[in-house]
Length: 224
Picture 1 (cartoon, rainbow, N blue to C red):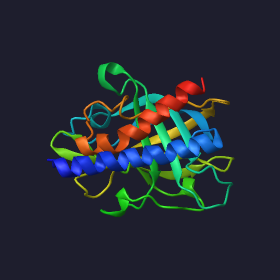
Picture 2 (picture 1 turned 180 degrees about the vertical axis):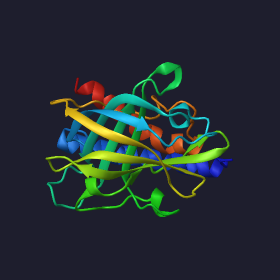
Picture 3 (picture 1 turned 135 degrees about the vertical axis):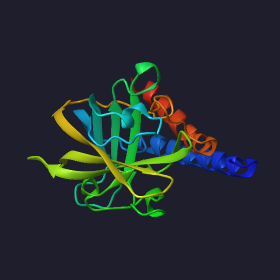
Picture 4 (picture 1 turned 180 degrees about the horizontal axis):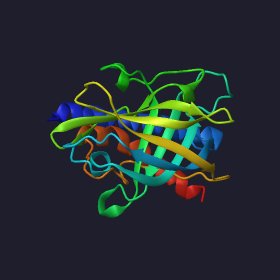
């Protein structure tokens, strides 16, 4: 259970983050984070389902279509320190058979490190997690992707999807495979609006994330 003090602290931190991002956006006249990226059609194959999580996507073997966007948080040149991001949209994996969005960023992989962002000079070659947990049934769920294959270009073409319950060991559940690039595409991902069916963010996570996502939605409307 989240205490009122913890909720208020998370809300204040989220508002401060949104304010900082707004300043960056005003100065640069572009998205404050992940301004540049590459978008691909993608296939997610679940071949190691986790029974009992209450999350349909993770509970059954199957193949799912969607999108992947790879980006660097600060859009630094190749070889510079940055935090990599992988945004995944899975068709029909949200409530009412709508799409579900998942956001991954470079972190550690240990019990504590999986919740801490990590800089890397080769961010797409390092593991990424969803950073903040969601509720799945009676458990706390975190997801991780790690690259397992490279194509002809600089970026990996396959990622292994792993799930961790209650801070425990990672369990491989499937493979994400990138297909053709969608040139010029810049879809916006929002895991609070397009949540994964069977999951719900704790109230403190919503309080922390919502101000920044609300700002991102406003910036998106201004640029379209």
